[in-house]
Image (cartoon, rainbow, N blue to C red):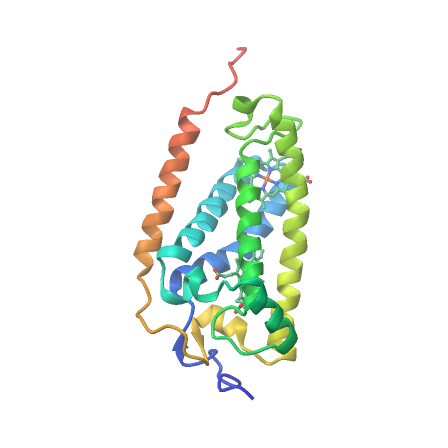
Amino acid sequence: MTRSEGLPNGGHYPVWDLAVRLIHWFLPVAIAVMWWSGQQGRMDIHEKIGYAVLCLAITRIIWGFIGSEGARFRSFVRGPQTVLRYLANGGQYAGHNPLGALSVMLLLGLLCSQGASGMFSRDDLLFEGPFAYWVGDLSGTMTEWHKTNWLFLQGFVALHLVSVFWHQWRKKQPLVQAMWFGKAGHKSATTAPKPLWQALMVALLLGAGLWGLISVAPVAPSYY
Ligand code: HEM
Ligand code: HEM
């Protein structure tokens, strides 16, 4: 029995700051919209939400260096030996466990790769990503990658869900409450969480940078 068990909101100690939680819960909603819009060819929606996913995944990565203590990669990313030891012996962690940390990095990487490749992709009909014309024939390869990466992303999201459910219901660790309320049963951070506006600034700067790149990217000449 861990101290956090039975606590409706996951525990007493701050673990995930608001930026981590807002970015996290945006993702399942956004991924569902991306899947639907990708299938339906609703590229107007696909494009905009895709930029948001890309900027927020990069914001989370930057937050892993400048964010609150619990959000920083150095507080939870561990070497292979620790991962193997965790696989052999298990253990309780306030933040991500060593294996969970690997999946965090992988999911964030796949999200970035999905968003970035989309910007070079084109469908067979009417839409092309803002950098598709610029890379010419390479756009076909990027479109293929966009589709293949999607298969990886789906696979690892499924694995993520299975492992969260496993910890939550079989091992009775209130991870979902922790990701929702930001509290855990174990103390991890010794410093105060960083304010949301700092993460917001990072996201806005990235958004502005992306917008700048899109507006200078060469576009196909119009034939009309
Ligand atoms: C497309 C869907 C999803 C994606 C891409 C995704 C991605 C991620 C990422 C990147 C993290 C690391 C959080 C961070 O440190 O910033 C994470 C953690 C977490 N996610 Fe998700 N997630 C998804 C859906 C869900 C859903 C539906 C649930 C709940 C049922 C969930 C529950 C959690 C929990 C509990 C953690 C914390 C795990 C831990 O304590 O180690 N996720 N997720
Ligand atoms: C980052 C999140 C993204 C996700 C999860 C995502 C997901 C998807 C999915 C599921 C499809 C359908 C694939 C298939 O039919 O096999 C698709 C297609 C496509 N996506 Fe994305 N996408 C993302 C970002 C973007 C961005 C930012 C752009 C461009 C601005 C983009 C451009 C395209 C294009 C052009 C297609 C059509 C490819 C084709 O029909 O051959 N995507 N995407």
